[in-house]
Length: 263
Length: 263
Image (cartoon, rainbow over the protein chains, first blue to last red):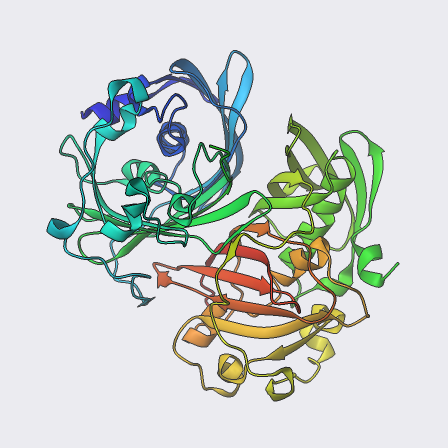
């Protein structure tokens, strides 16, 4: 069992309740990463489902939970032959922190009938930029859990050279060797810096809704994360992330609507 | 009040319950259109919210309700200063038919800080294709509620000439003159034929999850719907729809995950 598997464990209490322990190792300057929190919720959902994979997850983020014990409350909405739908809520101190609707199904290992190409080209990983470890006082503990190698222009904002458009692209894998699986993908779709940073915005950009679809089971190796946005307006922005695996298959698609930070 | 306003009316019973009447005029061969059903749900959500607009809606479709009386049950999840979150469920015969999570907020009339261009070019409306009215026995009553003018290649599948990739593009407006509003947009994001039809698939393509974001309040006039998909695999496909208004602004973005039909 990897550290990530441990940090996302969900222990069955009864049919509708799972105990979890939110790990302080997934902090982004204080709040815990939304992708990590989705992975925790999805462990409970899949454990209670007759199906194997979280095919579609819609999460609305209400509040930022703190590290430590929490619960996942499940409500089975529909149990179908092909797919089951579950409402899963992350609860701490009797308060809801994240509301999700999840459809589980079992994906096969089949070739796509039709697939588009990746939405952007990536330079080879050895020409990408690995960032230095953040200072401990920044409380960016998430960074130690994963390795990312950025497409250089999309991380230019760090040196005061934003590209001027919302985008972020990187290769991604877990720091502790682990083949990607649907829970790693839940982390991956929310692992890039907010795409608005490369359009010049800064500061904490809280996600309001993040919906992602698991399209295929990922092959071992690096994942490629292609992040972009279509519009920044009235304090809101969208962020799309495509995840491609090392075999060149689209394995996940996400879109979030988030608030532009005031930092 | 237009026919559409009437068909989407939600009458407050109490804080958490609204009565609605599902109109048989929004049928697509039997089942009611998912966008129409979202519009009905959103009327109730916005009426009960301190905010004016449904900014993000995630809907999971469990079953197809029949025309006639139904209820919307609301659960207020969070009421914030900027945004409120609500769970809304469409109920008929004590059974849930659609589960949604909705964030409401109030959008201003401001220019975007940054916007991308439309994802595809459209020919002028006079070079687009208007389809003949469907035969009454097809029970496609939805078609009478709206006017659509299709980008010719994307409707070629009707004559046996699919483009070979998932896409659908059209101009859209209500048949009864009505300026577009967020409820019309809820209908619009699910109004195109399934994008898989132009990739050669046929038959009823049930939506599992549809998430859409209201990005701006639409100007009067035609809407432009740009639909596409990234992958068709293992019986699942994604469909993205961008909606642009007559002033050239991105007003809505949707993505649905749906099952490929067996027709």
